[in-house]
Length: 631
Image (cartoon, rainbow, N blue to C red; front, side):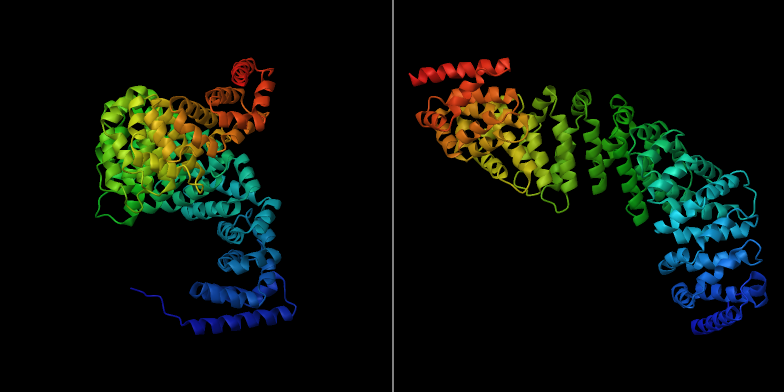
């Protein structure tokens, strides 16, 4: 077996220095045209530089660069030069070094390299593509130069030619190099990406992919290139039309290595941001392929690559479920394979990433009332609660807890489900999680509790009569660092008052300091929250006036009322609820005096002539009570 002789690096660098010195002498002698250069052994000099670069690309590149070689390569990049392919290869190797790329542009190498793209020498074309691709890597000035010289059109013409010349020697390598050049030329460059799309880049890349589906190197580069173009909305739209997704599913079903499979999944995730492509993927059978991949890769004895593929495939299934049409197709009236695998495989699994994917999948399935009712009837609540208990208090379990709570919240929306969830112990399970301090989890937890309480007296009483729970809700209502948690806690306090209408519940909220949160909520930016707070405060002042009034005074409720009535942009329905609230407080001499001194009574009088008929009617009713109180 012939082994490559070992060449010591110092020897290589010495030979490089000698070759560069000879080149300088030839140029100093005025021999600058290609024939003179050839006669001085330019071919040998270029070979020496290539050898040095192959041994140590960075060090040799610096030596060559500091000898000022770049401008001297321009005349050697003519198609007439017999060593033009080797010179273009030299530029390609040099441009692997970041510090050489911009100087290549400044030395004028881009133009002759672009011109080489049209020559008949396939070796020169290939090396010119390599050189330009390396120069253009993360280099917008080089990209602009290539664009101005028509380089993109020439490159796409080369790629198009490759689709009809598959028997050509070096075809596979040329496809890889050409697609690599297109990737580096267009990546993150919006105008070039747009132009490439308009010139039919997607069609050409699709043909190359189909013709080379058994060549992993070509497929890898094509997919990277498509992935770059797909970052823009226009790119996704271009890929949606020809159903490129279907080709990817076929490729995924073939025997491919883990690296290529990872690239396929990454590209599918990008494409699946487009709802139409989500549906195309589902129709092409992507979910079945992804389920198989997630199961095959779940084996604990497999390596990191397989584990990564399992995660990516499960995540992609969840992403497909975020589209309404694709979710409906996968749900299949409750008989879909994905749902069955989630319930029988993912949720009972010992893999946390499958737990996360499973609960997120269920949350997406539970996006309409019919599905929610069916899922609860299928017994999905118990495994969700089991996961919630299993991961309660665990470090790093936020995604699972958040996903479980999201699913439970959706499941709690239909009235028919609320009683079933309560009987299953959902309320108690949620209580056990209230002491956590992870804000996103608390936000979702509070929202789930509020959904369970909506329209239900029993859970409202159960929450409101538990002093520890009410105390915690009041604490969370003061978490100014997280507006979402603060808002949801206040909304839940309002909900338990509204749906229980219980003096005991009102007293508990008052005693724990919750009234101030409700007053603050009444002046929030959102009319829905304003109405919820005002209704709860009105009920509190009605069913438990003695305990509520004192807290309202200390919460500066008069200022809040004045602010709402003074706001010209305030929703009239909100101001109608303010009228009802004022009416419930007129029995308090202290508050009545405040209303008079701070102008609230005058505001009510003015609103009696408001353009909104319902508001003016409510204001007149309050005005009548004010007049009775005043007399």
